[in-house]
Length: 144
Image (tube, rainbow, N blue to C red; front, side, top):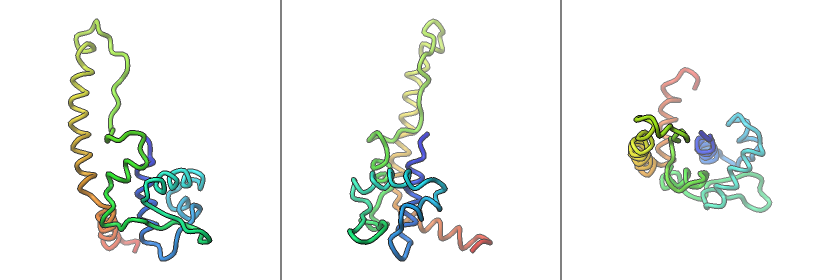
């Protein structure tokens, strides 16, 4: 599974909580990747109007408030599909086998149901919700 979505949320929390616009190099250090990957993801987020950069100012800032930014919108910005996709089916089940003949439609139904629930959760969760959860964890941890 691609990690762009989790990386994007990580980046957006950093950008949201930073006092000044953050550069791709600064973000890459926190995400644990390279700046070129961050630039690729920020390009997708900019294209959807989620973040912005200003001429003459190095770095990115949110274009949407954390309380209004749904995780579903972030998913759509960095995903290659407009529907939430969690699971893939194996490609070549044997039609001569009773299980092989029927497994794809059975799993397709189950997987789509799970994905619809995941999509609903993403539509009900904002970036602010993630920030609040993170702050709760930080307050409850020993590494404040």
